[in-house]
Length: 304
Image (cartoon, rainbow, N blue to C red; front, side, top):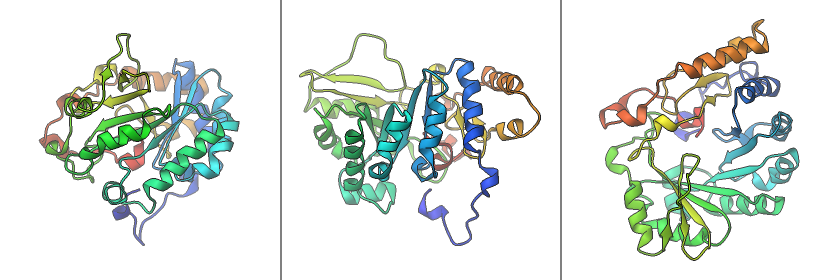
């Protein structure tokens, strides 16, 4: 979580208030029965959860789902092999800068870009071939580093994805003026690389561009300049069992209460379906500078 939110008086949730692996497995099973094809473990930092490979193995047993993890990468040297053995398919690593000072300014973390790169190398050694690198772009901070980052990962087989700076939560001081748009990112990259947009339909939230020389691809996620609310298919479940139907939500549905009542799996499944059918979220489509003051769940709580 952000350092400014962590002090001597910070009250962690009692373990009893956090969903157990068995409860997470039960919810995931109902989502899969409803047609969900991808399950992602995220955070905060999910590798801080003790025994995470055990959860991965439980989710893997649910069937033919795409099982992914988003991490800051620092603990991958310790856990990558176990995660691979447990059945994890893919890893996404967050890395906003290759420069230590810029990285610290963006993340305020006690680790460095070198630590993250070591984590990526550990994932490679463990056998992960589909590694994505997510970089949030903020004007005046790391926007002049995009070409350097592209060159670093070009030809490695990894997919670097640039993400427009979003107003997730209310503590990051977001301003519309700090956003570097997809068009601006592309303009800067195309001064140095020949990029081709695929003609086939592109699933997922990122728009992909191939290097013309066949050395890989990059992606751009443009939630601010080109909202895709109408195509969004993501539900998010917090560690304490709140279900959110939008990354920019300010309230969730209490799934934990359903799980710890006498409700059957069929009843839980029906409630999940009702929540999804009733969703009307479209924050990115109505976003303005003034909406950024609304209360929203923090990224460190809800995940990406």
